[in-house]
Length: 447
Image (cartoon, rainbow, N blue to C red; front, top):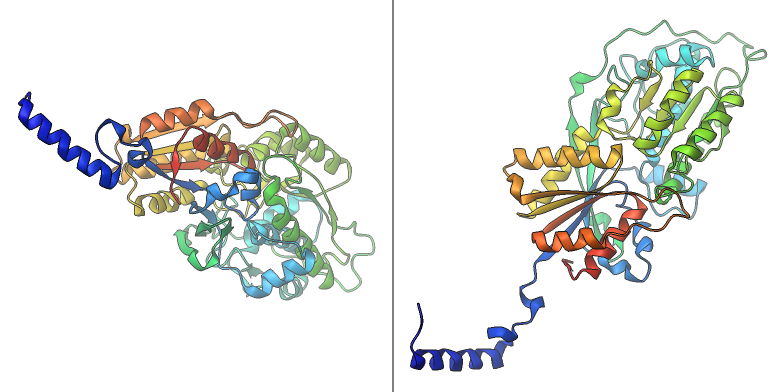
């Protein structure tokens, strides 16, 4: 309805008065005053203290960013032992899972009395279930050498053992928060997930007792690394490498396996299938029995056929893609990291607790990113977030370190137009370009 001339004049006068007081009236209202603020969320691939450096001079954009990662409350003693291996360590992501993967693989070989991967696979799940409880390499190796069934509980594996599929039946997740450019440990919250009854109850072959003087004719057990020294996931390499080095150090200090020190051969997965395949081929030539890795789920999926064909074991400390549970692995694939079917619930809960109403989930285009993206979407929809308030987006990660960085300018504009109040970014180091794109598009990031 049109207003009278007198009332219009009165309205304009009132508006002018308010404008002088608030600078927020009429057509002169600044865009920033009404712009939607967006909360940032991340996952295990980017919730690290080393992540802000990927943003360089704009590192402050992560301030207030929240996310989840598979993580148990790490004992101070374990952290101290890791720092003794790598004094420059600033993050602990997947350090415990890597440590436990190495220890479990070695214990399985000791129980099998062999370096043959086929024999080792029959003991890996059993190492974590239905035996004499032990919690460190020295005590567990002593029991195993005596032919005793053991139930290993380590740093990451604390509540229950492995399922028949060779992955944790239960998990612990941490909600992390960037306070400034560092994760504030004081704000970290832990939540459990999974079902203890899902742990395997199968009876393994009888453990072989080590005979006195055995080992003279035994080839040493060789483990090979397939960890992300380079590539998009390289920011997670230091804690994983420290976890592996610490495990090998403590195992050999306890007498090694099968009467000889365990050998570790380093190897890079490059966060790249081509690099990873070359590393696997070299490990096969060098007589590796168990390959510890790969870092990314997509990389493990790419090399798994090669590993299976060679009859070796692939044991990842950091793969979370749920679909790997049923991969065609001929019983040769294991992981200490829990599947994203568990993490998705924890992550959705973190987002919903902040009262978010319009949510965008941005994921790197691979099995890890798209798998977790789908799981979080499903959990959000179960919680009542309507489909029209959810937007899924993906980006192509760089093919290698020399490739051009991710250009997310178009995607950022779509997010701004959508009016999102929450953006979940599922990716590795390269995902920093998504945050840059949002800021460049004028999206106000809430801190």
